[in-house]
Image 1: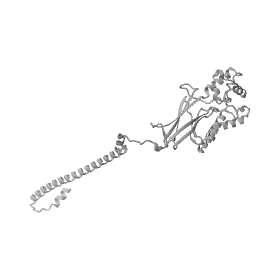
Image 2 (image 1 turned 180 degrees about the vertical axis):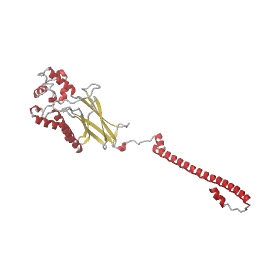
Image 3 (image 1 turned 30 degrees about the horizontal axis):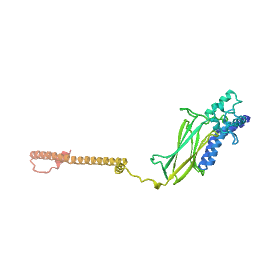
Image 4 (image 1 turned 45 degrees about the vertical axis):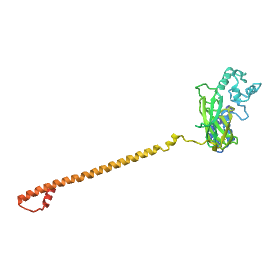
Length: 335
């Protein structure tokens, strides 16, 4: 709170403990609201995060986010023809015309002007289209894209956003934006927290086009830490009946591709041919082995037969025996 200095050390420690975990707790609440499709409650949760970060109550002016500003300076800034009540309008006033600085020292005035250059000043643009579709019309079931382009006008080319200006929050917070697309009835189509620090960035929301009709969606771009900078855009979508789509004509070249084998079929065919070749090689090797073995066996038997005949003749001639018994010859040859 803005009365932290009046707390005891123990209470300050308790407060810091709560604030340190507030971000995760609030985002969990936002997630629950998303699942329950409660758009209004979800947006209240995001705004609650803004007020916690800036140490403000709901009844407080969002000009109290500026350094050194009190209720006195806020009242002064709101007076007159160029008086303003919101932070975004105060930022748009030229520096030399900003009110509420009359009683400040030069250093205090400098702090305010530096802060005004840090607080984001954004421009939001959005368009709806169908990816890779030459027809500008949107038909039921088309995949629609809502492209949200956000520009931080206070930054120069190449600069990036940094930490949030929140002097009463005891922990650093980086600037981020909640981008929400919902219906007028409060249904949530998409929500995402975008933390891109660039001067210009885009965010795409994709959804299927509803049935034929005219629809108006609400696009909300909400700060995670600043009060009074949220923006809202209306997005209109006209969808046509899918039966009104023109007949799709296949190009002759594309039709011929249907007759061509797919990459998977080519790979399978190559594997089958390779396996067939391997089997043929194995069969050929087996046949060669079978052919070689009988030939070698015949040659060996012929040689044995010749040796047996010669040996038998010599023994018969030496012994004068006319017997044709060759059993002993086989035994001797075998040994």
